[in-house]
Image 1 (spheres, rainbow, N blue to C red):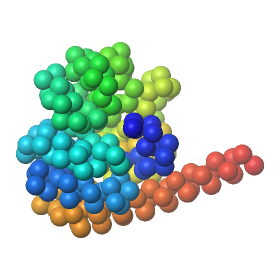
Image 2: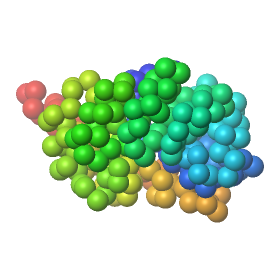
Image 3: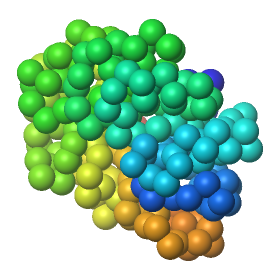
Length: 221
């Protein structure tokens, strides 16, 4: 299972970022997300015992969702993530050695970038998906401009200040998807709270997707 597989299957283009989640609650929170429809889940490595959470979620939900780690900063962390069973590797920067090791281990890498130079450094290291971070500081117009220069095979995601209120703006600008942290989960949230936030976000996504389909149909007439 890959990100392409999930998106082709109709999964929403949303990575849920569970920063601060604990292993004892990770499976319950992740299950609430998957049952709501979100099938891409990231546990940042600066969370409590993150590899335990990733392994537990993978064991419980790995046949229905892609699970991975974020804030991956060095090669040792890449290798530990792979051993945990995680499949997605998200970084806040574009370290070629870290990206290259993730690619070599067949992880779905998504390095963070701001500048064109950073984007092309990540692409040269093997990345085919990049996250614009912090997206809220730059805006959809910036991402749209980046799409004019990166190869067409590269997909851009927006992360940072992203959620239900601006999902449509990012998709309209050409983002393949968004990563959502605090707008979906904050430490202390229970599974029911997270499920409610996820349903609200996906209602917006379905509306946006419907509007996009109508626009394409009108353009074809």
